[in-house]
Length: 194
Image (cartoon, rainbow, N blue to C red; front, side):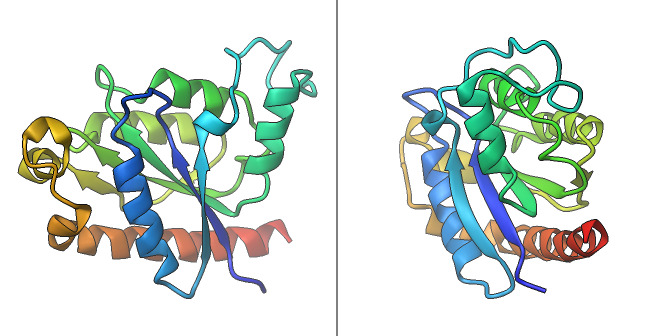
């Protein structure tokens, strides 16, 4: 069986987003492993409209070319790691819209998250897990949370804007556990899907 392919999805599209910094860092951590392949997928590259299909593509094929391109891309992967901020106790509107634009492609694949913010995006990650269940993804136990002092150390608003390597020791255990979970479940579910 070939190595699983995991998408690292940047869940923010704001021009001033912080997401690029942790996303690039987590991609480097993923590329240092040899048990899966990782690819960065940026929502900005897809210019998705607000969901306006007749129904989910679980029931009716999508018509919008942007949604179809997104579905095709998402379908390439065996699992997902969402890089997400926390907006008002939840995920970004752009990420929710992207999740809604696809259904079939997410199903029976594992997911986790790398959340960042004052509380490590804990509430957003929990909300994301509930959405993932409805989309028939398999949320794994572990996730990565960049919060508190570590978050403000690497975020420009904290005044230091240190490199992500400065907070790596606080994240390394969660990164390993999350990737281990994603790989195990991606292999198991890939085998079950045939």
